[in-house]
Length: 402
Ligand code: HEM
Image (cartoon, rainbow, N blue to C red; front, side, top):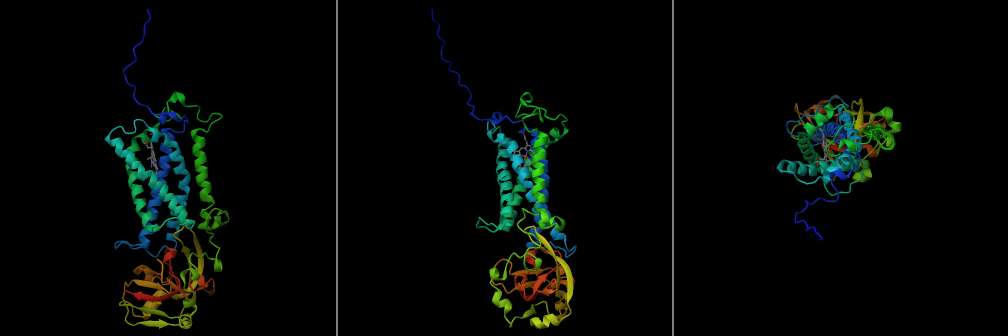
């Protein structure tokens, strides 16, 4: 008698051909993810806080008063912001590589909390990649977008940090237990312990080797760029978009006179500097020769660009506070400093009450003992302590006192 087996009516649960278990490398483990996560968390927090400072200086809310001292503080905060962003690139790429098998996790959703956690990964991963890409493109002066960079970079920063806080809340338990665990390559949910080859064995990069490689990449990127603001490392700034001494009179220029369409106006013998506004008792007007004949002051101050480079220089010119005193400006006045430039976001800037009365806030006429080069703002430019370069207005023609 021939016995036949009846075909089974039981359905086997669907399982996609690729799942989280399909990725064999032991480096896709929780401890590596947790260690890289901590480094990323610190880096993103530092970049976020220093970025907030820069944003509030440029678009100050009513409660925010950025002091004029210490003179080089902005140079440090913005140098740290850009350096941290650059150093974070290898960390982020490594972290995403370590955790990407999770994107094939099956079932994709294991309940409401898991769904929320997964959705929050979209702003976390998308936001992190956007922040680093847009920041690097910006310092390379490449703008492949049509939006206003500071506004979008600022708001995506908030979204990313919000998503990061949610992510840390979801992963803090795992991170803690992974940190407590002593064994080098203990069990991970994603990869069973038995499947793990010796961490530093021949033929494969162990966790320590992998993390050392990532840290080295991060360190080298920093070393080859940070010389754009740290003078002793200037010669190593091979990957930096700017060198601190490259430019007319040995100081870099972002906006030239031709780019700002001010060349003729700046060279016009009819040039005048005017001090006026409702905060003064008398309106004043000066020719360039009259400005030159006034008592001058010399100050050693950096130009500190939002793009992360900075360069110290010796400036000489008329202190703004002397002009305010001559015009009978009221105490605590703020001053709108206007350029000959007619178009563009940085054709004017504001001196808050602290910057307006700082003795080193100058309308500079000279740089390193020579008349200003036209690309540095001839006939006169604003230079003050602890200000971003975009607020050191060039080709100044009017001070409006409020
Ligand atoms: C910008 C920063 C970060 C990004 C883009 C990021 C990205 C990710 C992604 C996409 C996953 C996989 C999620 C899943 O489906 O389970 C993950 C997992 C994880 N992250 Fe982060 N993360 C960041 C920061 C952090 C921080 C600050 C910590 C630590 C406090 C952390 C600790 C972890 C841990 C422990 C896991 C779980 C790994 C596992 O279960 O194998 N991450 N991260």
